[in-house]
Amino acid sequence: MSCTVRIASPLHSYTSGAAMVEARGGTLAEVLGDLERRFPGIRFRVIDEQSRIRPHLRLFVNLREARDLSAPVDGGDTVHVICALSGG
Amino acid sequence: MTGTLWVGTRKGLFTLRADAQRRTWKLSGPQFLGHVVHHVVQDPREPRTLLMAARTGHLGPTVYRSTDRGRSWREASLPPAFRTAAAGESPRAVERVFWLTPGHASQPGSWYAGSTPAGLFRSTDGGERWEPVAGFNDHPMRPKWILNGTPDGELLHSILVDPRDARHIYLGISVGGVFESTDGGADWAPLNEGVAADFLPDPNALFGHDPHCIALHPADPDRLYQQNHCGIYRLDRPGRRWERIGNAMPKKVGDIGFPIVLHPCDPDTAWVLPMDGQTVWPRTSVGGRPAVYRTRDAGRSWQRLDRGLPEANAWLTVLRQAMCADHSERTGLYFGTTGGDVWASTNAGDSWRCLARHLPEIYSVTHAH
Image (cartoon, rainbow over the protein chains, first blue to last red):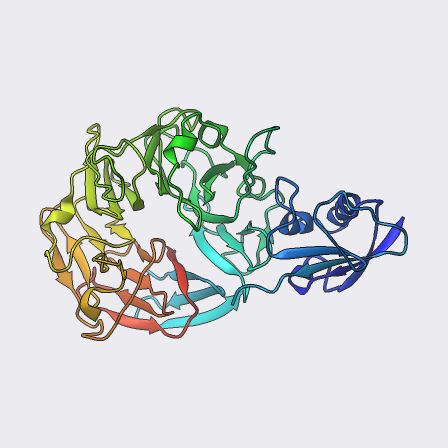
């Protein structure tokens, strides 16, 4: 299943500047796995070694915020990888 | 000797390059603008190689590697990370890679990294792939050693490899103490005897101390110095009891600070940068009058060095990685402040001048040749 992934700007160095990319997978974990295969290193910047979403990032499937990587993703969905408002 | 200062800041990486006489310095950068750069370290075994510990405000922590003296950088393919937690275990994730240390001269490509929360990691391929050092990270005593962790997470730093023996390693944890391994990191034991910890109920605690910076002298690896939250110390091995050499500092100045820097050849010479540790711990230069203090007799006496530094109204803070020495015959000393200024001395601290102003908050100043 193919979805569109909106990539936050701090991650554009991994996607050669692309803000939107296509990815495959039926869950967020699979989508992130697909991204990692194509853009090595991107997953660890977003997901920690315990498979948790990092504290200053947010993942949405369409308009639904995902709390973990088991969230289902359907064909045609948009996955948003978004930076939380934080820091200074 | 010419040289480069690598200045890691909260907002990116800067360099200061010297001419042959170290009279003029050229500032360049930033590289990695907006990245939080905790440490940049040259590989003494392969001087074209540098490693950098960095993260951003949002993204996870990682390590970058350069093999062309910092012109280009590539991210580690497997950055430092704890092992996956077993069922029922409290999961740990590296929040920042805080410290980098090249491994032993006999082991090219070996590196160590320290993290927050306190974790020890090792690479054997020049910093490309990192693995956790289970002997420390999973040590059965670790939860007790780091029981009183700080709100921002404890820091693992000052990883020191004995130049005579690759299996002999020290490290420091703020807060946790100094620890030693004699078997390449498979087992560890605390080494804090004699060190004050006035924030602990037990004055004779074996661990739980707050070493800010530990240094081992390369020409006399049995000699260790430590700038601790509670004073300045020296330890001569095989002894196990630290001596508070900060007692010889002027009482009005005290012996609190973050960095301690050793002379590259003379084990009796060291420099510290005292900060105010009274009452609510402002940790700024004492009385608004910054000064470096030097000992030339292993801490029996200290000399104030403030020529060229601001005479008043300067409330500087210098963090533990933000002061270093070069290897010149007339030792160069350098420090960076949290206010973004870089100061230098090319006469072992006798006089100082400012090399750069208005940089972001400085976390690390290291010298590369």
